[in-house]
Structure formats: C-alpha cells, structure tokens
Image (cartoon, rainbow, N blue to C red; front, side, top):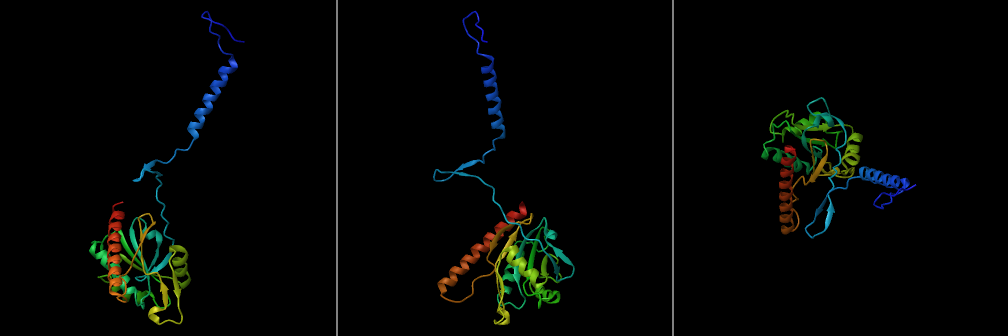
Length: 240
C-alpha cells in the first residue's frame, strides 16, 4: 500500500523499492566478477591491439653424463643463462658451431661466469664416449677440464628423444653417408634463460664458402647480424 505525503508526493510501493535494490546488488556483483580485460595499446597505424605477455617453451628435462664424470640434469642449470648445441666429434661442420660458442663466451668475458653455461649434447653417443668428448672439448674450451662448458652423453634413444621431442630439432642418422656426414642434424644454437625457457634460436656457423660470391657474402653478413643479436640477447637475459 502506498502513502501520500503532505506535499502530494506518493511513495512507491515497497515491492518497487526492493526491486531496485535487488537490481543494484546484481549489477555490483557482475562488475566484481567480470574479468579484467588486458590493456590495449595504440599501434603506429592508429589501430588498437591487446597487450599479451609472450609465452616461451620450456627446455625439456634430461639426465645425462658429463665428460668429466658425474650426472647432470636440467635442474643443474636453473638460475643460469645457457646456450645449447648438438654435435658429434667426427662431424664435418660441428667444429664451426663449437668455435662460435667459444667465440661468444670469450668475447663477452663469460668464461668464468657462474651465471652462464655452454652445453653441447653429443648425438653420436656410441662413438662419443666421455673420453672422446673430453679430447674434443679441450680443443675449444681454452682450459682443460672446464666445468662451465658441459659436454653431455647419453643413450642414443634418450638423445634422439631429447632432440626431436624435447627441443624440437632434427637429427637423423644416415647409414650410407661418410662418417663425417653420418648425421643430418640441427646446426644452430638454442638460448635458454634462467627459468629454463627457450628464448631464441640462432645460427651456429657461417655459411660454407661455396656458390656465387654474392650469395656467400650475403650469407656471412646474415650470420654476423644474427651473432650480434645473440650477444645482445645473452646480455639482456643475464641482467634479468
């Protein structure tokens, strides 16, 4: 039942009052529960885009033998920036990749850094025993028994799965090829951050000096540009 005041104003029925109160409470609940939209940014051409944080794939877990003895797993690298490669000691092209890694570490003054590691996985574990890896390592590390450059050995199956399913890089054994070419495999470098996330892939070696001179020159320029980007990214990740 509504009432009339002395001024002639008729108060609304009680059910109307409760209806508006209920609608207000519902609207407040929706506002609280509604997900917050990501921030937007203005693009250079006047468009609007949503800012989303980048998602980096995790480096795969592994448990392998190091050429100096002992077992190394991926958690041993937690809190460190590391660069990984895949090689075999009799490879025709792998020494160039390994030399790039040595150059990177030397030029950046990271040889004795506790925050940085180089990691080489052998893809030919049948031949590349820890002793063979030690001989190979000593040619590039700059000092014998260098603990900051890991040369890792495991079963053929574990290494193959680590490459193909873990790091998503190719490796294939070719039984009819010369020994120095017996594996068709990834010759690049992988950069992993302190949280164990793959942050980039980079060229591991300059191009072969074969073919048209202009093409070779262009290839070397591309390698140098890519190498400079790798150095910049390593420095950035070390600061994080």
